[in-house]
Image 1 (cartoon, rainbow, N blue to C red):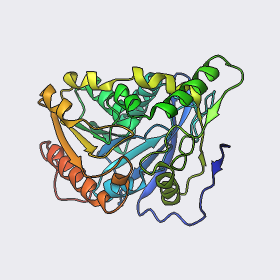
Image 2: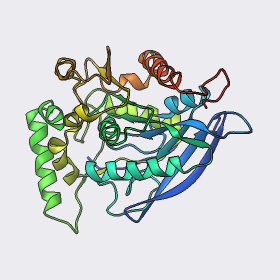
Image 3: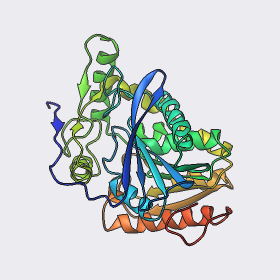
Image 4: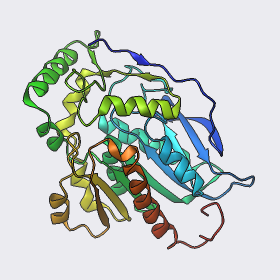
Length: 321
């Protein structure tokens, strides 16, 4: 299957607040970021949310409803593109190394804390899918943060590998090995593909969901990922970091997730006191869209209210201070 860019639809941005573009450095690479602000004129000292998107994600794709919801609730929200993706610089393009991504997210966190609109002592991590794993890793390293949310999180790469049908796993592995042996001639595969077609994700309505997400965010999307990226999947196991978390953390899984299986019994057996588990009756991508989206957002807003209400200065204003 030929990889291709999915063009952005043309329509006006109707976001009700402000969007401030900025750049931060991660390992000497310039990364693009956007601070999404609620309505208001004197926006200072806001409680902020750092968003980490998934496997082949870029700013806005699939997370636009969450940005709007959180901004409407009075939060500042920072999104960013990882090096080599979206509007960020960096070569090779569209390569994924989870440990480098966590390092980049840590730089984004420092960038967010430095912004004058934000209260650096009141920051929440938010990660989805592969980025949910990054949120767990950062949460284990930053006990000073207010809390963390990981939705449909990829917690154990071994479970994701086991969930991949064997013929597809073999083909992905062959492409990954060829790519790793050809540093000057990159081998790319589609990030998402229609069901039954070849790509890093073709299950749970991945392709259709990305098209919907692109339409919501007005983004242009380069639908390809370096095949060697897949070699890191089975080795990436943020679940091991759960025991180190000391901040309130909400994990929202999907009961029919075949992309990042949410094995609630395994998590419950860990008995981590700072973790709250919630499960939606959904596949991996349904929590991004209605009718599951409303239930998902309600859980997250309830959690955000619970952790912000424990802090001084949270009142009934339109901004979380």
